[in-house]
Image (cartoon, rainbow, N blue to C red; front, side, top):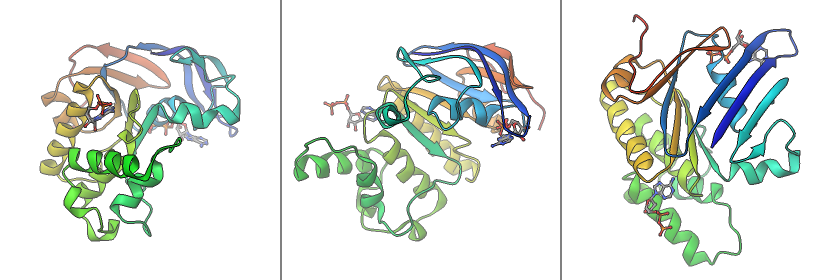
Length: 228
Ligand code: ADP
Ligand code: ADP
């Protein structure tokens, strides 16, 4: 479902973040992206939701070429992709329900159907009872659950997570991993950049290691592979 071929990314300041990267990811896979700081992980991930564009090379998601995709078609792409960030990026003035509902692409849906879908995903992440609370009233783990609910509310084919446990304590991180694995079990592809060695080593999935803008290791059920 995701095909990158010779993807090269040079930022305006001249830094080459991706140096001719080629990879294929199938629907339903769970993939960790690991590597040292500055390796190109975030850039790699940003390509997927067209936050950044390749300078050259080919990048297909479900047959759609992101390199040539018109800007006005980007919302259509984003509907198929959920994104989860390390710092949650919730809207502080909206409550939990509203944060999730706000992300829902409403295409001639009745208010009842909207409410049903939002409550369904809040139940899935275990926060139905906190629907009226505001982000500042929640723990970090709860905020990440809201952002996960937001990422799946449109039933995307792929969820992309950039360091989703980076701001969470170990215990909370395991709960968040449970959620991602549960979402993956419904057939959703998960692509997760992480520095969390414990998580990668204990919840085995495909590991792609990036260094210097290239894939240096790609192993099914691999380990984290870096010290510390
Ligand atoms: P990682 O996520 O592995 O830390 P990044 O993809 O963030 O790596 O960064 C790869 C390289 O590109 C680094 O040298 C970084 O400084 C540079 N870089 C990242 N984003 C930008 C940007 N918007 N403009 C210029 N350089 C950037
Ligand atoms: P339906 O379309 O009949 O609701 P789905 O297979 O879409 O059935 O969803 C089944 C359950 O899995 C729902 O409760 C839904 O909230 C949950 N779910 C969790 N993550 C996703 C996802 N990414 N896409 C679809 N459903 C998901």
